[in-house]
Image 1 (cartoon, rainbow, N blue to C red):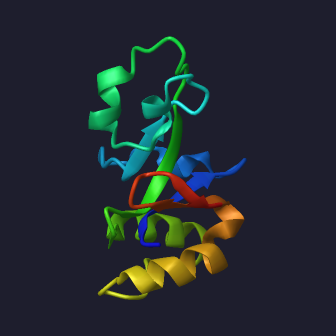
Image 2 (image 1 turned 120 degrees about the vertical axis):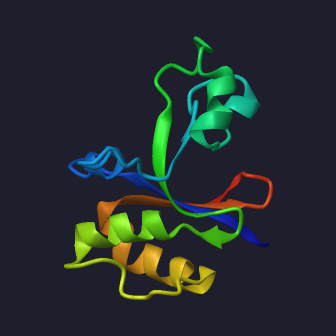
Amino acid sequence: MTIHAVLLIPGPGHEKLLEGGKCGSRPPIVMRGDVCGVEAHRRWETPDDFADHASCYMCGGPQRALALAWEGEPVPEGMDRAWRAVAVGGYPYSNIQMRHVLTVAPRDLAALGTIVLLDENGREAAR
């Protein structure tokens, strides 16, 4: 099984990971309508893709997560933002590789919330 994405759903007290920065920077987030009855709406998507069905009354307020990896590639901005919440300074590796994300996220970032792994079909492979 190939891991397509690694997400961090912030736990209580860590919701600021999903807020914009002081200068208007936006974190790399993905969204889904986790309580929606339509299966396609329960899949994790980028905000632009999710906007296609954001008006769905069954989705309610979408669940949001910080993208640490997406489409099989690390998301440096997501890793850096999460890393700053648990350590001093940014992520210590300048060349982030997928193997870093798969080892660091579950080990060092799990204290921030729930780590979700998605397979190549966008379905949850593990939590």
